Image (cartoon, rainbow, N blue to C red; front, side, top):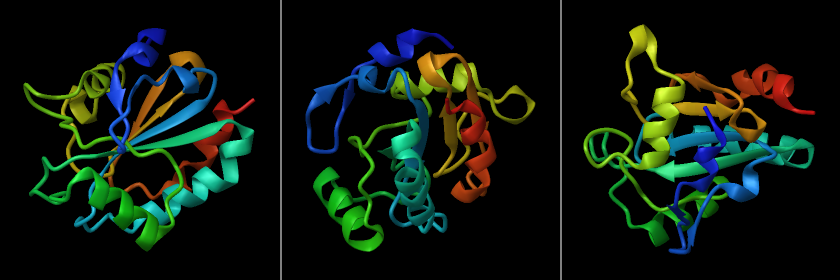
Amino acid sequence: MNSDLYDIPCTTISGEETTLAAYKDKVVLVVNTASKCGFTPQYEGLEALHKDYAEKGLVVLGFPCNQFKQQEPKGDGEIASFCQMNFGVTFPLFAKLDVNGPSAHPLYTSLKNAAPGLLGSKGVKWNFTKFLVAPNGASVERFAPATKPSQLVSAIEKLLP
């Protein structure tokens, strides 16, 4: 992994073009999310991580994706409202994107290359796959969808200053 990750253009859920440059010196947890998935309640745990560790240097970033059984059919505005109303999400959310296939967002292409899945698989298997990025992109670790946010605490704490 290298710092090029922070130069990749992204779109916030409110439609603003940006990059992840503001998060370069932080521990970053990137998660592909969906509002109609069995793992959707993980939003609560992700928000808890965000609240507990934001001041220590962690940022959680949510990237909605509709590639897995169309479990994120809503538009970006509806997604933002859903997350805020149902789970009190305050961490940054980004515009809906693809994580696999020919239209996969470059951020996810980079993350998958840096941290392949089981048996070297490059694909994201399901919603709520988590990528933990060390400050300045020094390393990337992948966690399965079933891994609860609370189970990431020790890995996060190892990367914090």
